[in-house]
Length: 87
Image (cartoon, rainbow, N blue to C red; front, side, top):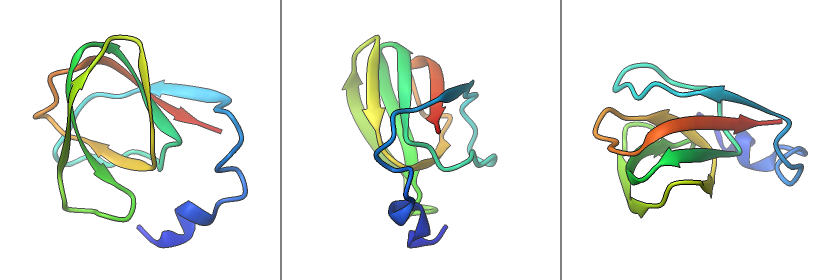
């Protein structure tokens, strides 16, 4: 992914749609504005500017929205009921 995702004119507009996310080590998702986490746990992701680099966000609580431009939610994720947020 390019740095263009960061410069999107819509980056500060609140999300207007969402899509459920099934964690996968292979499948990419459209660049998000963030992720809603329904069930607590750890969230292992790849950022838009860091493809191939997994980052684990530990101790995410149920009901949290995690802002960020993500392209993958990996299977090492223990959080559940994840929804990708878009505009």
